Length: 240
Figure 1: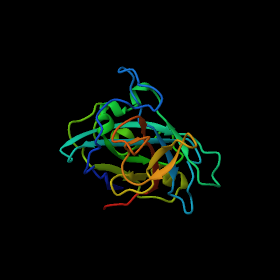
Figure 2 (figure 1 turned 30 degrees about the horizontal axis):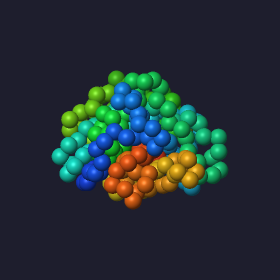
Figure 3 (figure 1 turned 60 degrees about the horizontal axis):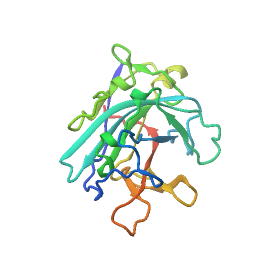
Figure 4 (figure 1 turned 90 degrees about the horizontal axis):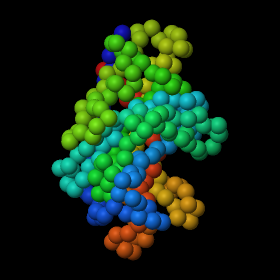
């Protein structure tokens, strides 16, 4: 039996956004009691030439880190969700990622709001909707440090994953095939989907962290939309 360690390669934000008011919608001012959910889609890039969503329903566990100002303020939390089966695996497409209950949803309002820059690290075993591994058969989310509450600092950046010594069975490989996503980060690629007001969809792909984008960039402040995260999952980089 091998015990493998995976670093959380989550980059932290270096600069804060300038806006601090609570206008989050481009149509109307939201009620102060209404929160804006952090939302995601996902792609399984672990297989060669794959740029689509998951072939079957897949559980995802993630760390969400929010930074503000000069990195001196950090909030981080963990949660899990389910990537839905993508029926179009022949094109560049995405799996919708759905939280199983309200308690699994995380909100921009709790993560510095419009001042936030979000980085995300996530893990998944493609095609597995219920994952356990290691001593005590820990669930996928319990391999990540933290809780549903937002911390006042960075969480531990190491998880433990056990791989069986006998990898001859295809079922064993499938159950232990841990993949990761860290493209939503300061140096990440294609992880931030911005809202396109022409198509009225999240179709503009950006690099870097998730953030709030003002609709009319000629003004220093105003209505706009928060980014949607695009988690791209790849084969894990193993540290022995």
